Image (tube, rainbow, N blue to C red; front, side):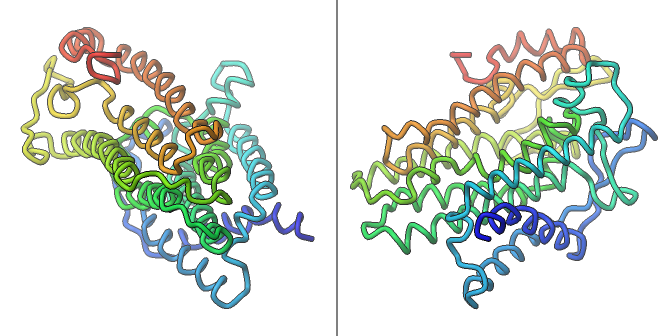
Length: 358
């Protein structure tokens, strides 16, 4: 029975999150992407921060009234992961097979997807918004359960472990607080909906992103100097500033081109029809936001204080591989879209991700 309950836990959780997304009032926001079928700019319902808050309240209530233990997601984590993998695979097949082939091999279509704009009920539910909402909320619930296990079962509490939990909590909350901004990012603009995105958000995102917690939740305080733990927290915030600052600057540039972001007046390259932002965060490197993501991942790995536990480094290694691959894909898309203007841009902003290094 325990195994079965563990397996169906993500299915129940995803169903509840979906129900909350449907019933909680949402803002209808206009994005950047145009429908491949109609040519009209897509609109999205966004209520992620309210769904996240409601989900946390529900998690707390279930634990408080002894209906579901606070530590359940930690104790059933392996069975929950298997259940999430099954859901991710099933949904990937469903979402890919319902659209016509792109002309590539079936396995390429399965991996990358066939349609960019998968929406249901006239846009009431958008697949990409739903993917990231489910992934973020489930990740947050896992983090809360892991923290509850650590506090209840480890005699020598590790403040670095709790800092790692706080970092991931910030990661989830700030993503959904700025949910509208992500409608203008690479995932929504360029990605198709297939295994890479669907399985990634339904299985990989909510379980793998917390991998550092999986292998340190039951370990005692390694007694790092307090200043070092604080330094890891500062490192995380520095990474967040790079990522969020870059995404916000681009968002304001796309939605209000003449508006300053913070103190930064936008400077552009233009061919008369298209423009590229070349200063502020986007003058540091072409993907300084990716650098910020990598720095945050490294900070989370460091926070636990168990540098020799190799599993904690899986998350930052994954991010390095992901961002290098995404940078290369984005370069191809932008070169095809902007032509000579992109060549001019790459001469002005020479570094791809890390200033003066790469």
